[in-house]
Image (cartoon, rainbow, N blue to C red; front, side):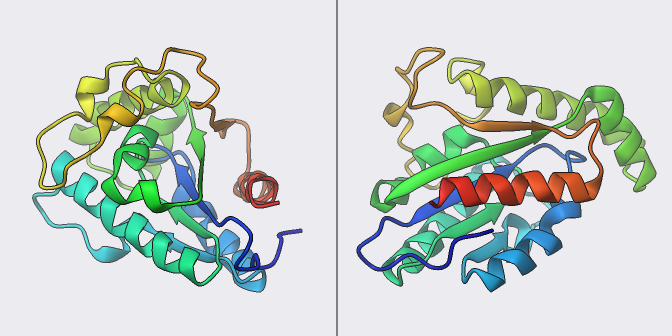
Length: 205
């Protein structure tokens, strides 16, 4: 069962449910959001702000900062905040306003390349984009496990001053870089929902 809103003296947590396209984020969002409403925990989808046709890495990083600021608002109200989106944990930690957040936790939903292709084809994704989705999903998985894995993928010029120095010196296995990974290959949508809700409950208690 999910915990209710913390008191103002308790630390609030910004929780990220991330993963590449096809991993299961959107499929489980509505159910998880309903459960969070009962616990008075705020929940949002990253793309709710609108995605421009020319969205790129710099746009995503600006939008990460937007959501971190929203989490800071919820924190001042004594509430946890859960964000669903295709966001690398390195970007979340480096967003300028993350320094104002009491606590950060992340959970990666991951699936194999074969399952990702099957799911994306099933929902009508452009076949020409499949290789890019698979490549990013695989990179996102390795990045979530190891902060030294190809950081150049996200370290690009943008309109916000990302604080890469917060984690760029952390070695593989550093306890500060420790995040949940859920393999969604063998799971039904209901099972993914259950595991995500269980992770949230553990993270806010």
